[in-house]
Length: 109
Image (cartoon, rainbow, N blue to C red; front, side, top):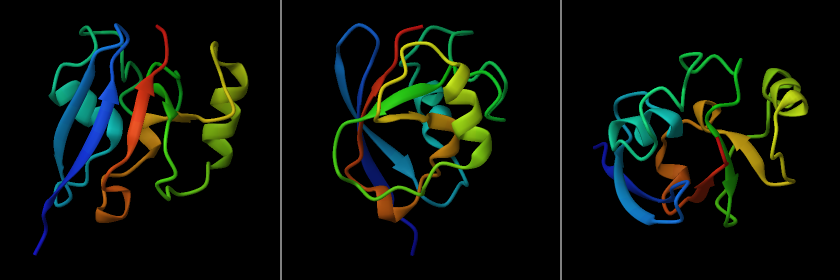
């Protein structure tokens, strides 16, 4: 039976949010950030989750096992600003039971 998982998200103002994300709706981290309105409208997920804009860039803060970056994600991060070693695109991290407890920080706009 599908269940919700917990994700801890630090927004761009430094405020920490512990949110619940459904594992049965084929969502990704970017969509969860939008669902909870943790970034101003029009500042995250501009490309609609196609790994083409980096507006959903985030920093993974803990050792939760997430899938490797795709070539498209690597290419987009290569062109993005504020990239760190732990940068990922939120639109490329699917909400699954395996990422329960994920902690991220949204990259600056």
